[in-house]
Amino acid sequence: MKLPQIACVTRPIGHQVKAMTPLAEGLRRHGFRVRETYDRCPPEDIVACWGWGWAKEIRAKFPRTTILCIDHGLFSPRKETVVTGWQGLNGFGEHPVVDDGGERLHQKGWDKVIQPWRETGAGKALILGQVYRDAMIVDAVEDYTLWLQARSRQLQMEGLNVKFRPHPVQSRVGNDVIYGNVAPKTDWRRSLYEDLEEHGTVLAMNSNGLLDALMFGVPDVRLYNKGSMLYPISRAHNPETGERRVDRTRREALANRLAWCQWQPHEVGSDTWMKLHLPILHRVLDNSGRHSPWWTHSV
Image 1 (cartoon, rainbow, N blue to C red):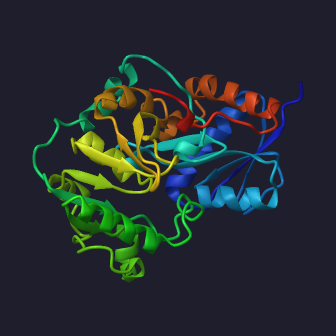
Image 2 (tube, rainbow, N blue to C red):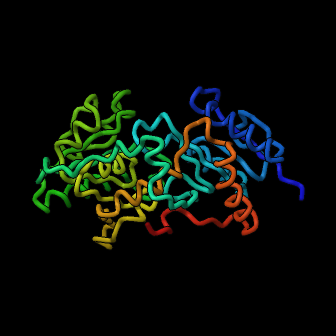
Image 3 (cartoon, rainbow, N blue to C red):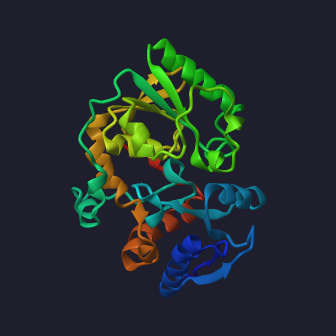
């Protein structure tokens, strides 16, 4: 069987190249022809790229492309690892499903992010803002500001004191006014954990900050979108608004599974990574691009 050619596309940015180079090398070791390129939209049938926004751009031009989407990892500090999902990012992508009882989680030291449940912040809710044109949310709502404002009103009707944390990327460039009047803002220069410490409820559409909140011990975590890696342990709460609440009793089980969804850059393209990911690739190719996204799995 002649293996297809794969394009590994990346900008000449350190953290992207750091993950894409070992991937290209690993694919070559396994017999694939690989072209490393800075092309925006390469014509190959299989493409590895950084970020869902870039992946959507490629898919818009070549709808049948099989895509491996790479981005920053899941557990904090997120920029030390990467997540690699087939046909989508985070909950929309397919990842290996491995049950090892937490062996990898503990081996890597990632279990240290799991903190005791917090009793602080009762009666206070924090809404986590995402980058305003984040590719993970632009297809989910027509007007993100109106969506945020509706969530703020909902929380206030529950009797909660609501604060809004703009995404630091927006605030750093002085553009957090784009969110409009959601709720009183926290200081974006504070660490996320300082804000989490003060709130017993944390809400977002599908921000990775929800995972940070759950692991940090925030007891009430709410999401609204299948793109969240927490989706498999969430339960529908309000079908009208799409609100889902996380079952905190499944936190450790989820963490064990997520340890096989994120990788240190040097592990991407390793024999272990290939053993878990190549069967997914071949199955996707055999099924005309259909995949089994993370949100469809139970934990």
